Image 1 (spheres, rainbow, N blue to C red):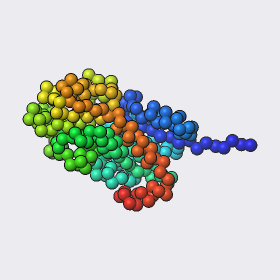
Image 2: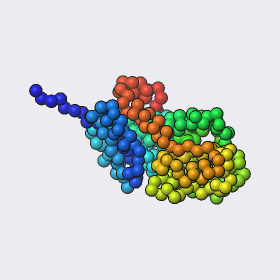
Image 3: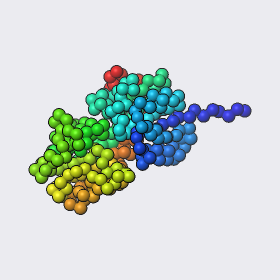
Image 4: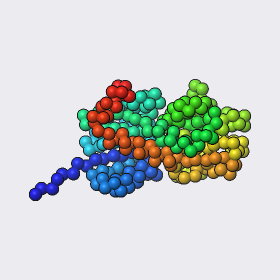
Length: 265
């Protein structure tokens, strides 16, 4: 009797210099634990976003995550965007339909909002968002929902953004939630931190870093030693990873219904 052919399902992460990434180990461990022998997860480390068509064309590809620096750049290669992704112009999850269509989602929003739950009663009315890339869009989306006013801080400020040099004692006094949505401090460059006047940080501040490797970045260490509440991005990553999995395994029928209600072509 011939053995039944196993339909292999490949998932993966698109980014640059992503050997440090949590996602590959997280999902492969999940597949082992849940006895999903037909599923595997790989890193697609790309020097250029122009290499992505060769990735998207793989026939056994069932879902992708997207990380820095391609959360915005990947959009032009996709067929559809979820409404939040369209608003933020940032994608971190891609679902593949049976007919080959690709749909961009953003689960960073879900992950960040849920990771703030334990801090919700402590959140101030004003925040600083450090960085202006794809991850910062998800942060801003959640802060808008929570009615927290925010100010972008960027190395190359545009429009209403400000530079790091413009962050002073008065600004920090009035913006007590500081969120690092930049890659500064990520492994292996663990000795770097956003350029802030840390001497102005105190016990009234909350420092949240989207980075999870290392667990405690220099940014968080600077806040901790001055009495600030600190939180890293590990829980956020776990939450968004599980949300990505939900998006990938939705039945085609349900997902079509979902698209009709929530998405816009």
